[in-house]
Image (cartoon, rainbow, N blue to C red; front, side, top):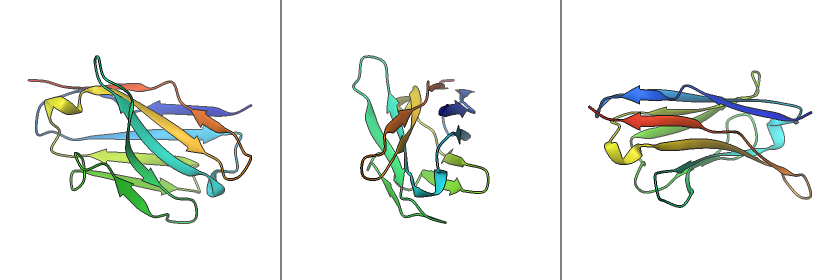
Length: 119
């Protein structure tokens, strides 16, 4: 059974930092591209960061978080991280982890974790 579980969300003040974790089971983690998406209040879900498969992967970011967020993966722990620095109120959203398999393999989503940036 495949499980995708996010953690690490919470309430943080503007300018603060949080690290989200997404731990998976039931998939061959190393070959999956991994993504963090978010959905703010009244907004569509958007792709925030992506890291390709392999030992270290290649990372890409949406313009609004580039230079503040860092995505990374630890294949030994089947976990992908999103380090978020210099948080702004507009980063408030539910953050979702997505495991995107190559070829005909399925795509899996986590249940989301709430991040609230507020003073």
